[in-house]
Image 1 (tube, rainbow, N blue to C red):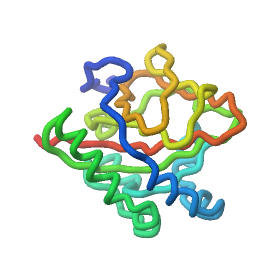
Image 2 (image 1 turned 30 degrees about the vertical axis):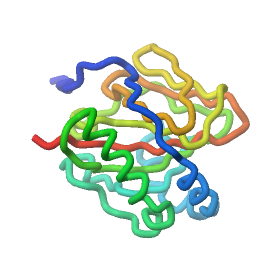
Image 3 (image 1 turned 90 degrees about the horizontal axis):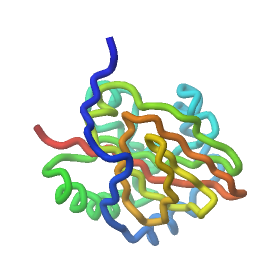
Image 4 (image 1 turned 90 degrees about the vertical axis):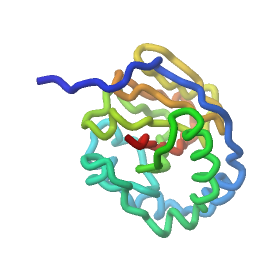
Length: 187
């Protein structure tokens, strides 16, 4: 039996821009050890083997039960996530209606590497609205969804249809860093 697809949207949907100055300043205080501490995603999911992540609100169980992911106090506070969260909630509520952020992670893709084409599985990842906010990027980093290619700019908020095949090619010598948010609309 196949996975039921709840989405009926375009590959990419632009939602707006956010000021990422503070989050970038805070991100610069993280050490390489911080980046390597939360390695569950890169070890568990082969498509993420070229990534490192900073978990903010994330745990494996939240992928199953649509509950808010476990708060990583260190990363949450160090990044001052409450500030960006309030800005994002106003964008999400305007676009989708009342709901809540159930997962947040900052993902870093290594230079000259890729995230191979894949579809996200599991009901929770399909029924939520998955958005990407590029924090560090450049024109040599290509994001593909459903065969469509885009170059996302820093500070833009994009929903992607993660039920379709999607991939990233980092053709640069820099890390690509995105804040990835899953927003769950109230029933």
